[in-house]
Image (cartoon, rainbow, N blue to C red):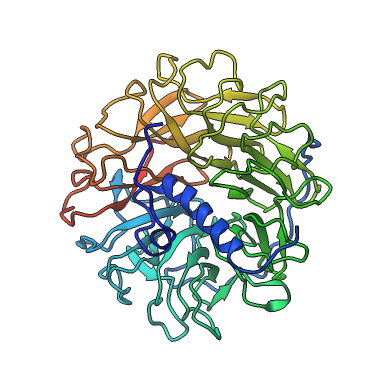
Length: 499
C-alpha cells in the first residue's frame, strides 16, 4: 500500500492533530479503543434483505441555533472558500469537516483562535459551526460557562438542518463530571442549548472505555459511534470495540454490531492489530447503520480473516453483509493495514465503500484499492470510479462519501488518469454517477493544480452535502483561495456546478 506512515503511540492518537493522516488515524483510533477496552475491567471468557420501514418520529424541535435558522440558501456564490469570517486567515490548523444537508453549515475541528468572538484555546482542537449565510463561526465545544473545552475535540458530525452537532472530546469541563479521566467521550449539542454526554454507561455510570467516530442521522435524532467501553449496554463482554446508536429523544443506547439474532460480535483474526467493529455510517432516519467489522460470527459462512462491511437494520432487526459481489460472495480482501470506510446514502438505498478485493465486480483487474457501490434494493455491486474514458483508476481510490440519493460520490485518489488538473499525491474528486463525469476539487484559485501539501500524503475523508452540490475537504495548499498564508491545513468548501 502507498498509505504508510510511522508508528504512533496510543497517546499520540488521543492528544495530537486529528486530521493530517485521517485514514491512518481511523485505524489507530480503533487500536486505541481496543487497548482501552482491554485495560479497563476483567472480562469473561447470510443476512435477510433489508426492508423499508417508516422513519422513527423526530424529537421535539430544537431551539434555533445561534447562527440563525436553517434555510435553503446554498453555500457561497464563489466556488471554493474557507469557513472563516471575512478577512480572517485562520491562525491554526483545521480538520474533519461535516456539512449540513444544503451546505449552508459546516462543522469542523480547528486549533485556530481567531475564528469567532468566543476564542478557542490555541493549539487544542475545538469544534466550530460556520454559517455561510451569516459569515459567522460559533464555538460548539464550550463548557457550561461558555469557556472553551479543556481537552481536544475532534470529528464533528452535523444533522441535515445544521442544528445538531455530535463530536468526540477528551475535555472534562463540557458537562458535570466527578473525575478527570483520560478517555474520549461522545457529546452532542442541539442548537444553542447545553452540551449533552452521549456515551453514558449502562445505568447512568461513566463509561469505562473510550468512544469515537460519531455520526448523526440527518433528522438529528440518532448518533452512531464506536466504543471500547463494555458498560454502555448489558452483556458486552466480547473484549473488542463495538458500534452503538444513541436515541437522543429517549437517551437509550443500543449496540448494533450484532448478529441478526442479536448476539454480540465475536472472533476474528486472533493476532490482528485491529479487532472489532468501527467506522459507522447512518441513514437519514437512523434505521440503517453500516460499519466495518473483523468479527467472524456476524454472518454464517463469512470469510474468516477478512474484515467485512455490514449494514444493521435497527427496525427490522437483521444484519446484512454488503461487501459482497452481485452474486453474494464476500470480499476476498479489505484495505489492510488500514480500516475500511463505508457510507450510506441518506435514503438507505446504497452503501459505498473502499476495498482491495478483486472478486466484487467483473473486470476489476487494476490491482488497486477501488470504490464500490452496493444496492440494498437490488443486491448489485459495481465499481463506480472510472476515468471519463471508462478506464479503471491507475492507482488507489479510497475514503468515499455519497450524497443523499447516491448520485454524487466524493473520494480521494492517487490515480493520475481520472481528470485534470492534478497535483502530486492524493487528490480529491467528485463523480456524478448519472453523467459519469469526474471533477477535481482541490484545484488552485486560477483553475490549475493545487500547490504542494504540508504532508507528502494528506489522507483524510471528504464530506458532501445531501443534495450533492457542496463538498468539503482538507488541504495544506496555499493557492486554493486568496489570502491563505497561515502555513497550516485548512478546511475548504467547494460548490459544484448545478446538475
